[in-house]
Length: 448
Image (cartoon, rainbow, N blue to C red; front, side, top):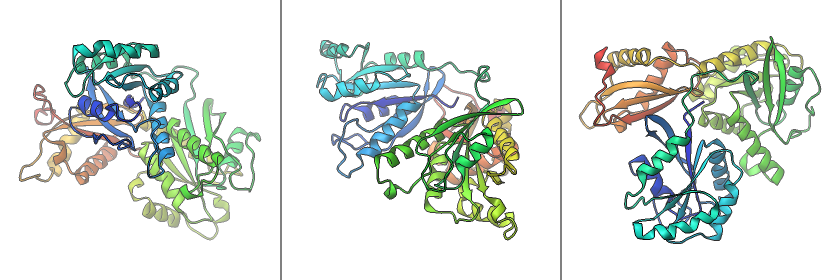
């Protein structure tokens, strides 16, 4: 439901970052002949024939990282592939098909997203026959050259044909109304809550930390609606991931967060917030998932500690998530659980809300009149108009004279205005800044 992602993959040194910069229209990713320069995913919003998409650059598949980060790089690549709506499989025309290209092709064979085989460095028509060698991978090829600006229009056309159509419809009948990921460190009572929800012993409940080693979906009914609770393995600190089981448990738990509609972040009322909790909340933030802080086992503390103390503790610890609501429950008995789920459904609805462009621009105009952006290099930046381009998360694109001139502090101010005045009070909002194109004369802020 969010902005569709176009993910660039391939072995090292085939020009993935060059393709990324070329399609983005600006130099963002580092381009270097050294293998493994790109490690984390790099994203940029692009417009493809009137539709917005996120372009994602990834590290080279099969690279052995000199800093022993190979597993982390591969995990980032896999995460990008799983979230892709279109995959650009980039190869090098001059090198021809290599064994590592073949390994990448095998890895992409069974993914659901459409794959475009992009033969980069086809700098001239004289190299077209050489590019034809890649037909052996069983896919149609697109000959391009980022260096010579060759084949860009054809590639963008192919991407546009495969992007999902923009739809404002609700999920088809029969789909669960909401998927809730129950996350937290080990032994905070996640599986106990799932058993309470399902009214059956669907999970193994144990005092031994780490009992749940995989993510398990449990469907249950509430007020006539079908919901899915995703029980996840307890998170460990990175240096505590000692076995393959631990590594894949963490990977699956992160995947559960990505496919959930709402994350319930569990804390044990009798324990202090630790580093694992902070890492987990940071991951939820980076995925732009609606989140509710759930203080479990509250029956053990209710007599000795007021809820206000925990509220202050959470807000002081997670200052960037001040908008996240807080619930105090006892998962074992079910106390306050229904109220928690009702509030989670409110978050779900907020994340799917769409606001009209006219209403959004009225709020931007009012925000500018009350507090205009500070000058940048002795000039005040100009904001022309805003539009919401996606839901889950609510995604707003702000067209302005210079994206670099809108400071992070001013962006946070605008996000607070949106939360205060639109129906996004408790969910993360993704904000993109784009320079208005030369042929775009829209200025909705001034026209109102």
